Each structure stands twice: as C-alpha cells, then as structure tokens.
View 1 (cartoon, rainbow, N blue to C red):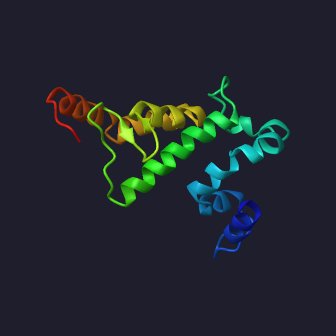
View 2: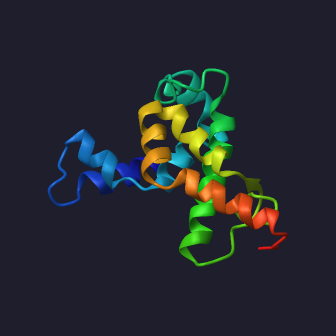
Length: 141
C-alpha cells in the first residue's frame, strides 16, 4: 500500500514532486497503515517516525496506531450514517469506545496548535455539553 499510494499521489495532476501536495493527496488510511505493527521497527525505531508525534513522548507507534485506527473506524461509521453515540458519553467505532477527548488528544500528539484550533473552531465544548445533557436525561443512543 505504502509506495504505491505515494506514487499515485505524486502522479495526481498538478502535484508532481511537491512534498506538501503529495502529503495532501494521501488518505487517512495511508497514515494509519504506516503505523501498523509490521512497520514498527523499520519506521518508528530506525527512521524516527516518532518525530511526527512530538507531543506523545511516552507513546510508541503501536499505541498511536491503535488510536488512529479507532478514529478511522469512527470516521467510517459516521460517513455511512451509522450510530456512533452511546449513553455513556462515548463514541463507538464498531469495535471499541472512545471519547471526544481521545480524538482531541490524538491531534495534540501531532500539534498543540491544531488541537487548540479544533477545540475552539469545531464546537468541541458544544459537543461535550450535548453529550452531558443527553447522558443526564437518561436517553440511550
């Protein structure tokens, strides 16, 4: 998947070898797969992929992959209009439960400015308030 995806991204019209445009053409799934177990030694240990997550010093690639995979599954459920909210203020990705804080924390691992922007511009506080209200009303989602 890796080198083929990069080659395909490089061949998109107008992209060429511009690194920023190549990165923008790669799918979220590409980045999730990059951190899977089989890539742990060659990319995380030997190539220092950990520098892409400067705010996650105590985590390894496997832990980050697990969280990214959960977020990818959640995103896929949302895009297929499947239920994701639970009565316990958690999101369900079809396999595991995670919170809005878990999603925001993952963004923080990469860039604290981006995480702050997401929190402030995309209704994070409003979403947390809605989840608290729904939970307090005893509504099962």
